[in-house]
Image 1 (cartoon, rainbow, N blue to C red):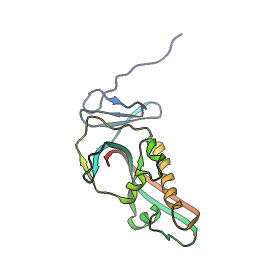
Image 2 (cartoon, rainbow, N blue to C red; image 1 turned 60 degrees about the horizontal axis):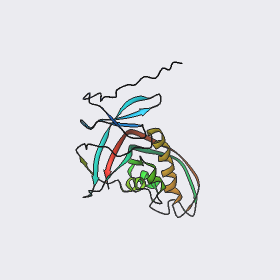
Image 3 (spheres, rainbow, N blue to C red; image 1 turned 180 degrees about the vertical axis):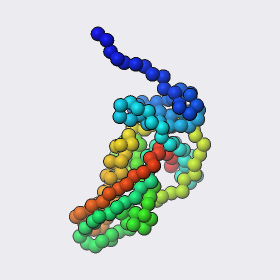
Length: 185
């Protein structure tokens, strides 16, 4: 019986050093030069911008988030009890700012929270202090493809939390320039 399994040494395309993989096998990080790579579809290794940042003066552990430059094309929002009766929804924030940095958790734990940190970051649009690359990137459990689906979930969640009763929401969320940001919260 023969198999066509090949072991390939994964090396950084920028500095040729070995890459470290997280346990989920969807993200590779070069601890030498700070380059990131996503493993997609048929085990293809694709370069991905990665950053380290902190919010305020925090020195807590880093948590990984997908971040996208986002725009929203709102076709229809029908609600009972008034249009945008609460200032908290992301649709209203998109209306004010036209474009946002949309954060999506890169780990499942944040989605289990009643108030996901990723949704708070998207509401707040914080000024982050970018840091030098670190030796290790935090775990990444969610693929970029799934992160885009979760972004829709977070947008709808923000609208369901409104004081009015949402009946219809028709939109197109455009997510561009994907990156991973490890943020010390």
